[in-house]
Image (tube, rainbow, N blue to C red; front, side, top):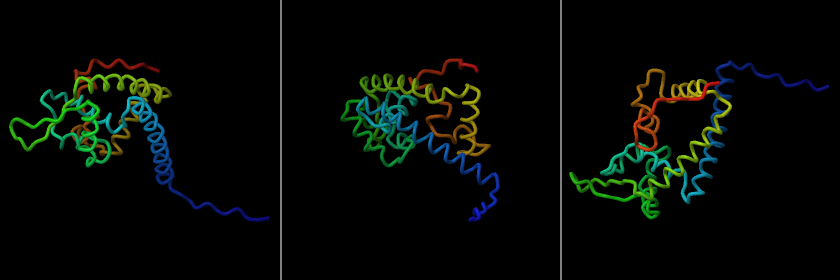
Length: 184
């Protein structure tokens, strides 16, 4: 009879770290694919939606500098100009020059961009409720806090967090209403 190979001892931190990585990776891949599908139904990619999302959160009627759009992106910031060009062709953004400095390129959402953003955001929010429906509001808050701690460190101020999650107005540009989450 063949002897079973002996497993090497592994500290819990290594095993749990790998497990957490796998779970975060799988959740990210699955959830991103679902959001991508909703975006494709509107004729755009998720990266285009993120640009609209960032602009909606900034709520700048005179436009936002392209550099800020690049900083607010979830993926490669170098894609921001290409993404903006596509959104301009779709009629969802317009490009402007800053009155104070003609070298500064600004972008802002058009009414059509706002409409597609609001329509898609409703679908994305419903999807997020479905994606996280196995967690209570408290558990989801804990998970979000733990992931932020892993990304930014325990003592990170909100300003060091990504612009899409750091204390900005909600996705319509209006102030956030009082939070009324479901309890479990």
